[in-house]
Length: 389
Ligand SMILES: *Cc1c(COP(=O)(O)O)cnc(C)c1O
Image (cartoon, rainbow, N blue to C red; front, top):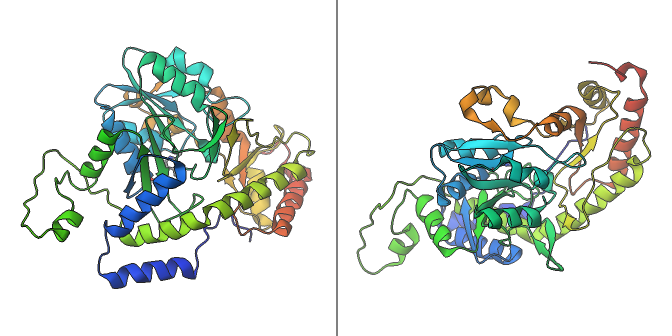
């Protein structure tokens, strides 16, 4: 069976966790601090704050820009549900804007039409690792004085061309970027998240809120020769990352350049071999973006059924996933007060129902990839899946 994704973990991560366990300091401490420094340096951000996952990162980012009851946040329905859930944790209303016809990211030309007096932020997503059109989005944010938050859950190691330079996603182009280290992403800490920003006040708040709103972190109290009483000036959460997770993350960051380089090679190979299949559309990378190819998502010929193709592939030992979901179609978003549609969501629905994510992981061999290509060809040719469903 060829899996759709597979994290790279070996003795290096085991050794890192072993070292932390035997040190006696196992939650947010020196390893988390080191992971934050290394991540900030990697992406070129002045501040980084590690958290329990990207959903909590999104929550704190939205709280930092003061999203409250009734505030509208422009985002996409074509994303993982956590993107919109985080807005609702703050009492905000997700306003869904459609994606581009030839990609899986927000269509920047549709954003302005969805802005109202209640719009308080834009939460854009670098979907599947492909950078969205940040330049245009940041421009709109500036023009309307609306902060831009990046859901960069999938985009560790992705790059964008910015003033003639290739820069990492997470270098503060928008106001705050949120990352995930779930095993489905390109680097993992089991679960984990990171916030990057250029704003020291946001960073101070993130570090306060992630630890119950406690004025003095454990690391400071532990190292102090004076007795310190902590206080709780604001309500906070327990959104900490453990030192064991951070130690794994530091090993994963060392592997990142190699992982992204291999993923980019594999994506090129897919595109080269899939391009000539009638009706199949391979994903496009804009001239100003470099994807980490967290996922390689193809649009199926319109005459085949998504589920039948996926089942035929599974029957032949190839695991796939349907393309990105549509949040507005889930029951949790059925009630009218849960969201607003800022535009038609026609492209979002078409992408959910007409795409398939193919296997891609850094350890994948060329032979495995070519086997997936052959199997997909065979499945698309099989007459039983034509016009099924
Ligand atoms: C994975 C993902 C998240 C959630 O990340 P967690 O770390 O699992 O909380 C949020 N947004 C997008 C776009 C994602 O792909």
